Length: 343
Image 1 (cartoon, rainbow, N blue to C red):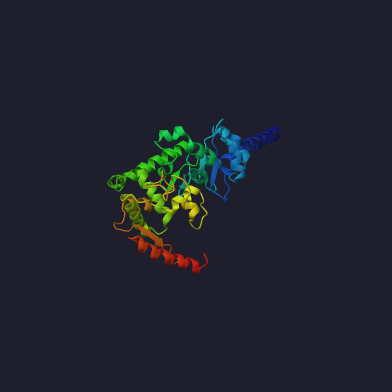
Image 2 (cartoon, rainbow, N blue to C red):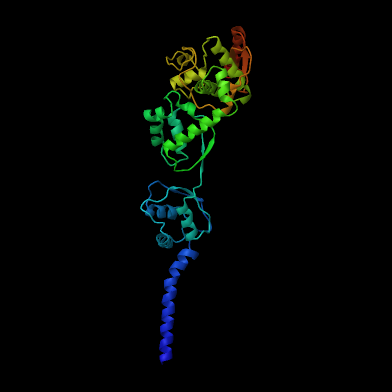
């Protein structure tokens, strides 16, 4: 009888021990990340609470058992008042323990921030907000802050010259100020390469002036091969004090970015950006300029052309002329071609 009693007691003890042991075993070894994920990335916002982290993980489908995750997170002291933010890549099949270690270590997965040829600060802010945590309003406030511009030696007119179109790896939770600091670093590194500063000085131009002219070249053609020729035309005009008469500057002045053709409205619009009315370069870039456009200005084709006009075809390229009379012939051909097509 005593032996039976002791046997039952031992069985009860084993059952209780099994129940008590099951929770940590399940939390540490058996539960965790599902074997299949819709996306491998989870975004934990700046100043997020632990409950918000659990909610993000649960809604993203990263937890098979949220309760087990929370229990182990507390045991591993991952739970804090303010959690580590960022964009984290999670692998299918991870245990809770591996997931917590990864999030706690802050091993972020960078994002590729792609800058192309936006025209205005608000467009840059909207573009960057599509890749980073800060929204476009916070980014734009920083880009327009007079104190910030002064810190980086920029003005509202030449701010755009800071941005070199490219793809940059950054952390998702990069702040607006750190984004700008990164752009300054990339800008300085760009101009330090390939003798760009020396070439600008040889032209008698600052990097900002080179960029401004490059932004005009950028908007004149999509054909990289003819950019040095177009850059040479504008440099020739600058040398002799001739009006640049660049159509893209008139479009920028009027903000009529949807215009298919430049009309008298554009060319007579009074603005310091209108190079039909004012000599020299406009006050600043009319858009971001690609590397190929910047290098075209720094390495222009040497010629005596002063004029260019679109070719009467679908190529999007141009015909060049050294005299106004030759230019008029080219312009008539293009105009006739347009009229034949009902434009």
